[in-house]
Every structure is written in C-alpha cells, then in structure tokens.
Length: 456
Image (cartoon, rainbow, N blue to C red; front, side, top):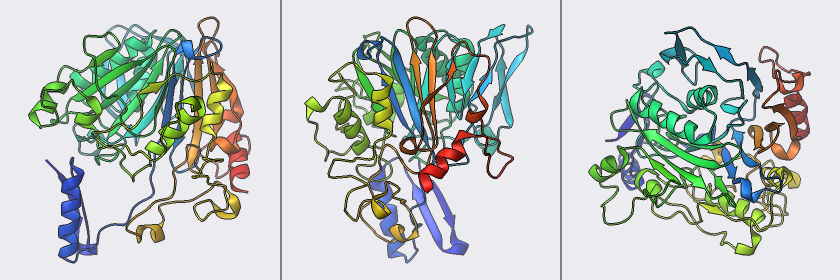
C-alpha cells in the first residue's frame, strides 16, 4: 500500500511508497504528465547514534550516545525528573511527540526511577542510558494526535523505559511490548524515509541496538534488537544496521509478528536466515553515502586497521559495513568526542579542504538541501558526522562502579564543549545546560555561546 499526497492547486504532487522502484516509476509518470515534482526539503531530526560495549573501553564502562541533528536550534534543555511513588490504580499519560498533548495513557507502576532527558530519554539512576537515530522503514504510521492510529513515539518509549527499568535488556523488552501490544508506534514522520527508528541502549554490563517501525495495521509495531559484542562498537547513521539475526541466541530479540509480516509482503522467503534490515529498511533514505559515509568514517577512526572501503552504499539488501567492529585500542569518552566532531578532515571528502565541496572559506558549515540544490537531478553534498544543524550531542558513560555520567555538548560538536552535566545520582541540572525557550537569545545558556562560535 502506498501513500499519495497531491496539492493540485499549486501544481505539486509527490508519492511515497515502501518500494523505491515504484517511487521512481511514479516520478516518471508525473514528469510525463507535465506535473513538477517537489524539490528536496531540508532534512530534520536525522541523528547519529553510537553504542560501545564495556569490554571496548579503557575504564570498563558501556557508552551510548547520539548527535541530535535537527535544524540547529533553538536547542534542548537537559531536564531532571525525580523518582516518584504513585497511587494504586493511577495512570501514566502518554504524550504526542510533536505537540506534547496527551493522546492516551497506560497503567502506572508503584515507583518510577529518577532520570534525565533532552528530546529523548538520556539516563536514569540505575545507569540505563539511551541514544537515537531516525531511519527509513517500509511501513509507517501517524500519531493519534494527527488523525493517526499509533500511541507511542521513541520519545515516550525511552522515558517510560528509564522510569521503570534497571537494565538495558529490560528496556528493550518493555519498549517492544508497549509498542506491539498496547498502542502501536509512529516515527519522526509518516513518510517511509523517516518513519522508522533506531535506539541504542546500555547499562553497566551491556549495550544493545533496537530497531522499531509500525506494523501494517498502524496499531502495533515490528521490532528487533541485537546485543553489541562486549569488545565492539556499533554506529547507527540513520539506517537500520541489524541484518542477519540468530534467533537461537540470547544476543538477538525479535517481535513475534516480524517474520510473518515480512513473509506476507514478500520481504523474506524463509530460505535464508531472517535479515531485519533487508525485510524492513529502504537503505539510505536521502542520497547514496548519506549514511554509509558516516558509518565508514566512524569505523575508520576507531578501527583504521580494517581499511574499509569508503565508496560503498547501504541498500535494503546490502549493509555495506559490519554491524559492529572491534576498535584498534580501548576507547575513552574523548575518542567518541572526536568521532562526533568529525567532518572528514584529512580524507578525500573533507569539508575544510580547498575544494568546491567544502564549506565557504574552508568552513565545515556546508549548508545543503537549498532551493538551488533541488534543481540539480543528481549529486549531493557530503553529510558529515558533525553538521551545522545539530542541536546537541550527548554521550552517557555507564560505569560498572560509581555513578553513570552524562556528557553533553550543546549545538554542533565541532564548535562546542563536552561537559559532564549530570550523573545517575544528581538531583538537578546546572543552568548553562537549560535553554529558556521564551527568550529569543538565552545568554545564560551554553547553547547560545556555542551557536555564536559555530556561526561566527
């Protein structure tokens, strides 16, 4: 089934379909009919996530994090939610991700844990922590707040998991159960390009990658999860990275409906082992190398001895690169900061070199997807890991001993400072890591200082 949208009064039509080939066919038909297609719009909320197993770090801490790559502002506050006790038979409101209005509720538990969040849940008092990355998906749904059918977003799923779970494995199972059996799932957008989600979640002993999308009814969900090997690092750059699943291993989890739906729609033939991304992903949703180049670069920085090929593309049938790699040396948080600050400097794809592809005056701020670029039928600017439109980057260290630590860099990482802004035992967040949205410019917020450095 496909979704079509037309604004014939303005002469603009476009179609999205779970199959990109069909999408191209529709574009050709519109062109033959003389109807102009919409130019590319600026991308939004396309984050880059990372998960590091405890055996891959120098201090034995699991690491998870993300860059929140939206429109570069007005920034997000780090918010602390205290632990709470709840009355018997009370309910927990479920809010719409875009508007914040209540669209449903679930039964509340007797006690919820303290945690921190920004746009998504970050870490709780038990050192369970999250990161996020939007992905393409063959099936999508819309929120109940927008004439849709689904109750849960990744924002609410991460917060509920932090309220109720003491382990990453618990978080994976809880999020999957809620979305599948208690209300359905919707992504950042109802289009197939951004309708799926990937979450990375860790505790002090292990790290996981979790993928989720809507089911065909729009009232349930399909999900899968893979444990990151203890001595590996996994990187999620806006595409599903879980491929072949060993469903006899405790290192994999899959929703009960996934294989049946894939079989029904011809996305799996039962002859080969089940491949989650091949069944439900559309690969790189923006342009070739939009995701693959970031995946190559992260692994090239952390495991250069692998000599990975930078020219590969991620498709629905080819993941191009491994799910995870073993780094060449034990990693510290500083190594991950370096990854998040990268814009390909020193490579043929550098955004600060003396080439037309670089930003103006050798600046890494290569602004893309404008009206002029939309007139060009092929090609695209490089999409770096550190991009001008980042709202924040966050990295959570889930230490085996002592407290978990949340490192936070407001705005784009290459122009900002990572600082330890919250621990799993902290009762508040310092004022510089809060953004007062009522002000045009909040001079007490570090976000605006970093924005000035980035822009000027």
